[in-house]
Image (cartoon, helix red, strand yellow):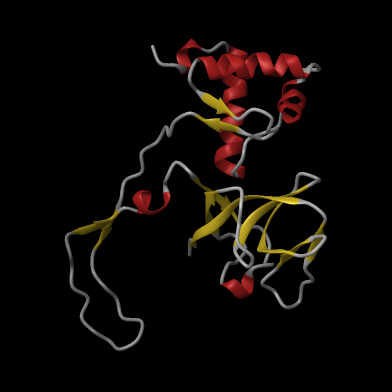
Amino acid sequence: MSQLDQLTKRQRSVYDFIRDKIQNRGYGPTVREIGEKFKIKSPNGVMCHLRALEKKGLITREPNMSRAIQLASREEEQSGLPLVGRVAAGVMHEAIEQENCIDFGEMFAQKNQFVLEVSGDSMIEAQIADGDFVVIKKQKVASPGQMVVAQTDDGEATLKYWWPEKNRIRLQPANSSMEPIFVRDARVLGIVVGVVRQM
């Protein structure tokens, strides 16, 4: 019997909700979001479900962090794509078939990484367009000028360049028609390490 088979119907629903948020949004839900989703009025009621999921080895939680729910293990292994040769983007040359394989899983699917779909064109001058997927390495700090996913006080996450200033943080778009966002406080969810575009 698998760990998932040992869950009650409600625990499975909560687990599926957490997994969906982490995989599709990039970070887990808050206790309040879980409570609102399942109409659980008491935060303690939500915590009971989280403790049960943690005890059964399906999630891990960092103390004193509201969104620090993580999946305990990767459920799906990713396989590679065949590298069949090279194609000219400059001078023409013969495309020669090869037997190698490029495993994008090895490149991107690390345990400390996640993917977000880009919405909007604020990073278009950094060659990141609406509908692209950015690969994010989870970390809580960033150097000035790094491209990050930052979360503001109101819970919104945004993809921008990270520029801490004297009494504020400037979240700088890569679009000359857009103004930067200035916030008093924000936290780094991770830095961009890759971009994937589906044509």
